[in-house]
Every structure is written in C-alpha cells, then in structure tokens.
Length: 66
Image 1 (spheres, rainbow, N blue to C red):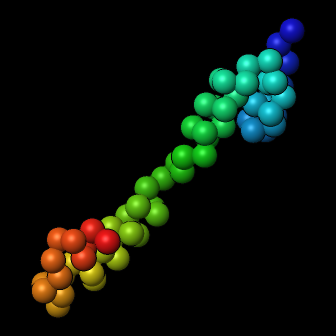
Image 2 (tube, one colour; image 1 turned 90 degrees about the vertical axis):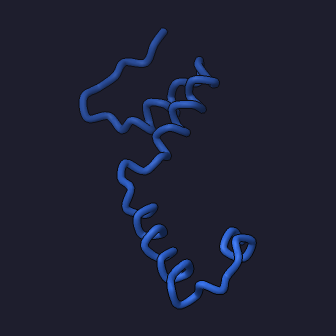
C-alpha cells in the first residue's frame, strides 16, 4: 500500500516513509541533496581567480590542480 501524499508534506519525510522502495528512496534522497542553485560553485570559481591569476603565474599545472 502506497503512503498517501498530503499537500504541504515534507518531501524528505515522504521518502523516509517509503521503506518499500529502498533503492528509489536512496536515489531520491541523493538527488534532493543537490543544491538548487549554483551560488557555491560560482563562489569557488571566483575565488580561483585569486589562485590562478597574473600575480601567481609561476604556479605550474600540478600545483594548481592540487
């Protein structure tokens, strides 16, 4: 028997209750952990300009990758 989806129900709580579908439950919870915006990746990209910029042009590819 499928748990009834109630309007306003927490999506994470819904997937916690779906113990009958452990594989799908794991996938759904993993997908919901992905941030809905790119703010964090943009922040990291902007910070990388300070590491790989004109002031530090002496860094080689290995050091930059590390």
